[in-house]
Image 1: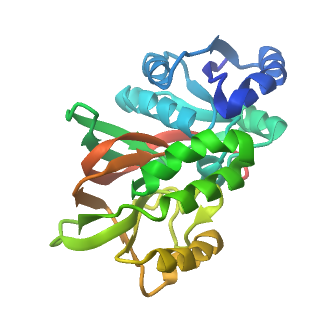
Image 2 (image 1 turned 45 degrees about the vertical axis):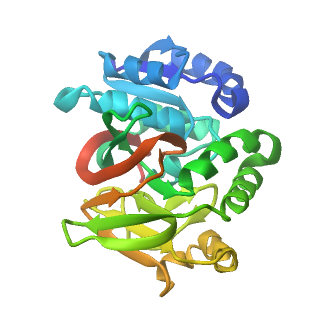
Length: 302
């Protein structure tokens, strides 16, 4: 019999995880999956629980923030780490969308019980915390610099009142005026490129940035690549003109936008660092790809 540690974030999407919990718990108790159920009191606690789980699977019940915390805990166990599974109860399903994991309650449960385990890439990011100490974390979606941390913080507050798209859209519009600082970007060890007045710099393992914002490009879950997208030296009017291209995904094909693939990226400058939906620290950052580092439960047919 397989064993699972099921980590429920009851605060995900203002309690959506808690509301779905009755259905999931009843079905899991009657399945052939032997489960231990835990309710953490913080994101740090989620990571701690995943890091000491001695089961075959760690199940993250929540959104992208919960998934990221559980992912970091699982990867802290090293080569013999359990697989990660997701029962989605969040706001913006970027991780699940990229990996083909259903977000509907019944379909998500079916994936957990009957899916297969495959190896998927993750990104590793090194940054500074609030005290200036160096930190290392992993991410499944993207690292965002420039307005990214501002947007994430405001969107997390406003989504509960305006919904996913509305809250994120208003957060983006409110953050566009800046200020925008100077960043130095180095890709795969090449000479640094100066980005004056950098509005946004995204280093991504998924083309889904947040709440419908996306880019096009042949980025796949296990291709050993990151994507780099940067927008710099634009007026407020110029940024507003770019916004529809983020929703259509065509922003990455614009001639006035830097877009390329990479295995490693470093960024010097000042500003906040956001990844997988939450602010985490400050620049400078170093990001690289960790091919096949995560064992992930996905639908059998994916």
